[in-house]
Length: 481
Ligand code: F0G
Image 1 (tube, rainbow, N blue to C red):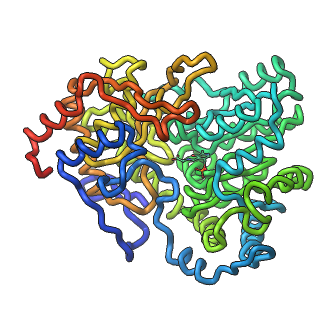
Image 2 (cartoon, rainbow, N blue to C red):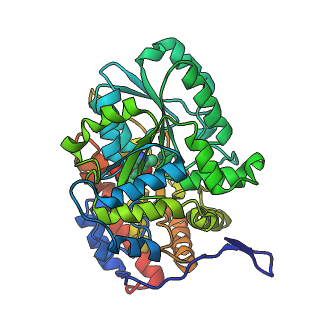
Image 3 (cartoon, protein in one colour):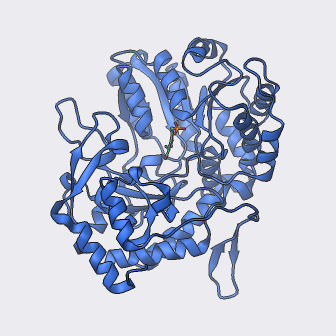
């Protein structure tokens, strides 16, 4: 909840108290330099013992509630017929309005099943924006992913409330160009991850549905951040101001043919699911479920997590839960802007993003500015962030690098996990880095996997800039910082 202080400043205030904590370490600069070298300048390859604030992702790293933990204790562990599953299915019916529910072990497992059932070689899949695993699965099935975003989507200095909207004109053009039969489905990602967690509006979703239904194209909804998208609709669309988060979620779901989600985000557990009201779609997906995930009443998830997901689905409809992450992000963005840093605006749903092209204008995309910035941020602060740029984009069929639309780093905020003092620390060290940005150089790959190279790829700094940056840091803050 946002509170206005007596001096007029607005701060986000936690609507929960912390009763279990985990110790974290801030390694000195010398160790941080060794650690990033050992990790091949890839923040994915750091060990958490070397990480101070883990802002790599908000996926599977959120604080669970007391009710979620309690529910895990009453889980009905069974291979088949678990009562925990039936409780989940009842909740999905009540909160989301779907008759058929299928748990899967995480979001990408849902994408795998959707790709198997809906995407044939030569098909196209339309979406407001892709996610890494989404694109990889649909392309592996022989499909072509086409992103039909609006012009505003790529403007990192925007004030537009709904940069995640799908462009209806491009949707109509694609139907004309490819024919509706070639379009497996249109996918709406609730807060587009790779362009800064930006939401779409309810009005846009309604229009997408109208056009899709007119051409019998299924509407698939990636609801990994469904509650945050609903929060933004409530906050940013005056027409929805008086709706509750729960009502907005119901309204969105009434438009959707298939919902899938990674339960690791809005619902704060580790798992995923698919839900629909179409028996035909459900049966086609169910046919593959036992082969790749598990029996239909656990779908590869731990039953304990499934119980916690049941509670998480209810809790995410509470405004105080839905707002927790976006309000911290908004504060983080405003503090970075005050310090003159190129933060992506407006703040989004899963983290605060910095535009690496504006942060490091001296680096061409061929030298991976977002990758370099992610490594430099770790070095100067112990904060682990994620590259979301060309390193996260695989090469094309001919082996050429594909420059990403945007070069971003993501400082994801796990829900209910970090405090304002952590954010103030990060702002301070990022500001120092910004003042010393000329010291940051480019990267080149030394080990490069073909698919999703950002996970395991190893890189090297050009001209050993890491050592020079560490030296400058030490000169200002001392060896123990
Ligand atoms: N869809 C979206 C929008 C996601 O953000 C993710 C994961 C997935 C699907 C895949 O789900 O991880 O449960 O298999 N995003 C994580 C992230 C990995 O760090 O943003 P998953």
